[in-house]
Image 1 (tube, helix red, strand yellow):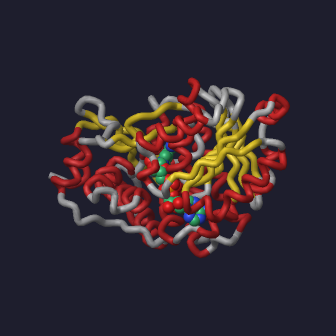
Image 2 (cartoon, helix red, strand yellow):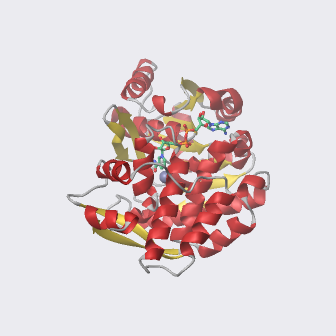
Image 3 (cartoon, helix red, strand yellow):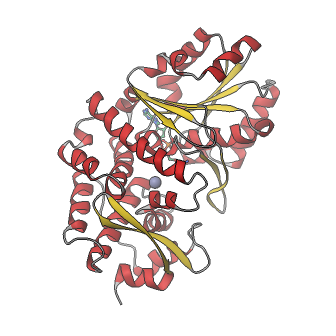
Length: 360
Ligand SMILES: NC(=O)c1ccc[n+]([C@@H]2O[C@H](COP(=O)([O-])OP(=O)(O)OC[C@H]3O[C@@H](n4cnc5c(N)ncnc54)[C@H](O)[C@@H]3O)[C@@H](O)[C@H]2O)c1
Ligand SMILES: [Zn+2]
């Protein structure tokens, strides 16, 4: 097992290893465990798919420690990150007299993590929560860093809070049951960390294709830990996303536009994969990174079965990009690779971005 300390305003540990769903007691911080004496309960929030496979292990683990468990199961997929489900969960917790002394456990992918985190941040003005990510994307990205949110009819993640968990417990065995597509989605974020920060990670996942090595616990633990280390470094420097945290958005500006254009039919990972390829090739064409960088990114993404191209037109991509919530006035912080393992944040005007991506 690996443990990574995240040094944010509310510090916490991320534990990554096999079989951890059954070892929760050993991994919870003292501040949560000591509440059992005062009769604390836990609220286990999960989705219907994850519930079927993993919640009994977690319930048993929590009950063994002495916690009462109130389980709330939401639908699988993005629809659960809604105002309706958010309010339903708050009401259910209020009806069951959940108090400030209690703790939420979010068992699932990024949807359950983001939704439960926002519930935790706001119920009684904030109660403890623990992230238990079960997708590769949530393991390497959404469970660490404290961004929580729900979607509004007007757009994704428009209501949310920065709220750090008390711990993150990532059982790599849960990755066994992910579909190939959802597993690959997480791989796109891992490729992102390689390009923006860590050329060794880039080489490692090139030599050992994770889609063919899912069962290799040491490899998976090592790669996930490396990504969490990078995210923790970046987030601890810029918890509130006003500066360097922007680099985690590599490939995402175009990616979000593709997601939006497809009405979210193209997955996040696939959209970001296309975004990373387009932007790396554009940066290379402008001489901003060494010759061959675009091809290196494109080849790795293809090796992972992820797409590298889109049929959306220049106008569709630009229109989608203009509706990005990260837009500040008339400029966007675009993340450009300087070489594999290093990137730069470039504040660019919309027309400069259009010129960079599509030429004149
Ligand atoms: N907070 C952040 O910093 C951050 C960062 C990136 C993404 N996100 C958010 O994360 C969400 C996407 O997360 P996701 O990709 O994990 O999607 P998800 O939570 O919808 O999970 C994808 C699917 O996999 C299923 N699933 C989960 N774990 C499983 C397992 N172990 N075995 C079998 N099936 C399993 C789920 O039921 C769901 O159907 C988006 O809402 C996005 O906005 C947040
Ligand atoms: Zn992403």
